[in-house]
Length: 236
Ligand SMILES: [Zn+2]
Image (cartoon, protein in one colour):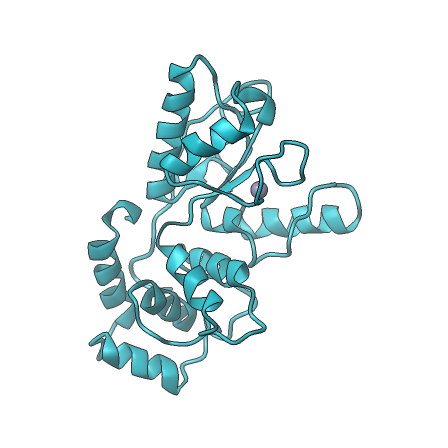
């Protein structure tokens, strides 16, 4: 595993589960998302409302189970197999829509101002995934990179962005050849270099991007992490 990864921090937030705090195994987030969520909770509280969540972080095993439950029709909401959800990167929340107290449209404005992005394109509470919000952070750069066609046409931008977020916290990614190389690729894209898709293969293009970034010798992951921390201090 790379030496320095995006840490996950414990978050204290109300849940739908008997209004108790969200269980600790789920209540973990990348530091910038944890801070953004605090602000959203404060914003709503100032309007007299208490935000409750139903989901946040999912471990590999939890994502696997959610996908199995969906496939077996035990769970209605779509859950991708491990490797494709921002929940696995500690960068997504599912909110209790009945707890926001304001219209979904108004909540979008509050959430977006703090760095959260809805996953659907119109604030319609009846739509599936109306409850899901991502804090993309620097992984937005991966989304944009793939969207520009830099990772091949067949690669969905959202999936590569999620892979980047997951690799950056050191969680297993089944779709890549070598997890450490995937971390280098994710880092390089976020730093503005051009390693190609996040596939965990150290090909000529990834090697060229490492060279462009001035990375050589030992511990390329540690060196890239140091650059990331400099560029995105809130994420560390
Ligand atoms: Zn979700």
